[in-house]
Image (cartoon, rainbow, N blue to C red; front, side, top):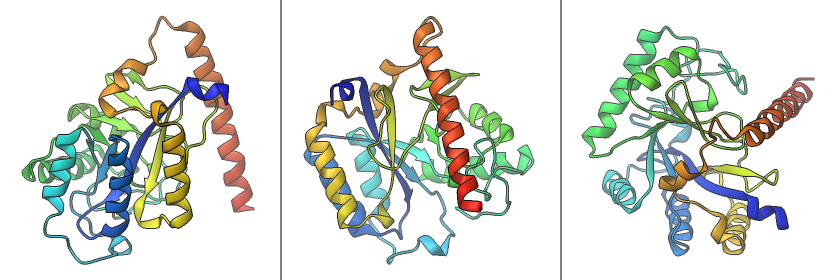
Length: 253
């Protein structure tokens, strides 16, 4: 498709921790490495979510993650313990559960700060925050800014800096696109089956030059002077919100 040349893709891996499905994770990293692609790794600092424990603890986990960071992967702090203790949907209102949204700012600051310290103690330098279940609120954003994080989430076609925070939008969990923009492909490696791996690998091989590395995000920032681009982004964001809301309403009915 001709419009593909206007679409860029960025890989994001969620729910990364020492007891994940290591076979799936290693397979995906090999696929990316074969085409020299780096992405965003969403690391849970202190996972307590038993539903995410798919294997025994990998004693070399943190060494492997550090090696990937050194190759160019960006580290995102994926919550704290990945435990949902509120039923808040947050600003995006996608899922009625959260580890952060609905809590006072002090509680959120404690969770995020301790999680950040845990990652730093492992020799990592987290650059972004990634809220479990895409659920965060204004208090979360204030703490994100305090800690110097960017955020990988939200609607939009291009990354932007808003209120001092770098926003990298995340719309789809597959290589879908609307013809323009930067699309963060959100992958949960634990849940990937043979079909998912094959589809991703075929897409990467066919559109390899459309995949960007995290350090290239700066070249796609939505700038204030880009009036037409900002208008397109605003219109498409409203449409996307509406479509997703309709889908949620259908699921509830």
